[in-house]
Length: 543
Image (cartoon, rainbow, N blue to C red):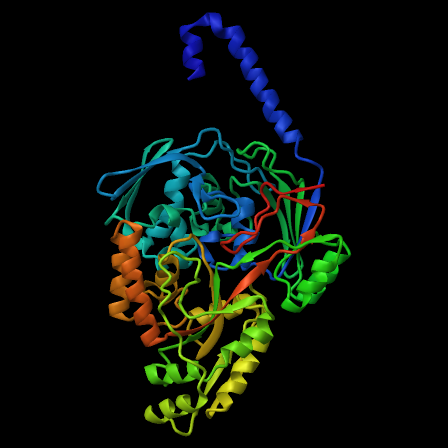
């Protein structure tokens, strides 16, 4: 537009040149203005990769999504409200079936040792990102065939019928039907925008899989290197499109699975932020004058999933018996140590549509034995019980919880063999359905009830985050109805019915919701607890 005005009005040449020079100077100043500060984050595990569309865990998202990438719309820091991202604004048609995104101009993809962009972000990148997930015949998808669990778990592969480039800065999504949580869902991690130009380069070089190891995005930090089980290194992005957001020149992940070691590193200032302290470490950390300990009620749920495709867990009475045999209060006292609350529903009390009237069965080993006898299992049976190898906000000690459940089940004649794997392997094998029962959990992704009921229990999620492999038509029909119904009150009535069916069928046993703590050095400025479960370092500074 400036060039057109110059052609029409030569008298503005000098003024425009000054303005352009000023703008260039501002951009250079912003590039130079990243403070020469390094922050080390003691993370709890190694990411499985750097392609957000493939993964579902906070370990992966902290390491890739909120460092390297952006999305069309994004959640505000520390909350669930959606704000503009790579799209400046969007329009929804009256029938709810067309959503048009108007893209931001002047956004640059990162320059790395392995990719130098020749153009800025535009509609081609959005179309590529979503077509790759939608179309199994898309060339990049064929060259690098992977699963997209969130995309399919939420039914977006069926909901989105077309993604079209209207012009270089406008993209239109056509939906099969109106979808109440669509904008919230588009803000999620799987929808991180990739560079179509970079993908073309990888295809040409026969290295499509490198997109998962050598990421390129538009985000606040540029990926530099990854040593599995050791470190991930990022540099602050001098060309980031959000002014004054990048306040760290270096961001380093020090991968430290042992929570006790994370505490010691924090105390020695070897890292300035740590993930997931053990409950026993909270009081000593609070007492340390060099450490700040923000906390908030967790938007999470720790639970025990039953693989209903394995006998005898396909029987409701068996699942009810196993649930009734678990002394959940003792688990909350021992595992969460005052930083947890008993769970009854498949979502936390802070989620709108939570049904207060849902009552969990009481701890009753005798009644559990009677239920097993009724199911023809008076002599008990043997199953595997998978224990998480990492600390998560919803489960600070998977090993201890598994041991307590194992002891409880022994009292009703059920022999549980505890199994565990490295975290990436644990999730991969669980997706494949190798477990009989497993400890897992969830931290909400987008503030919508569908993110609990659909993502964890819907039929479309059976090969994804529905670790119970439970597909129950009356429940699933309610999930689908909730997605196409507009208005919070109307949707709440639907989700209350779904929670009642869940309680009757019990595909998993809710255990607890936890309080979330984020220990950090007092030198860290404006680091926020993310209610959606990951860590973000955009906007974070160091004194």
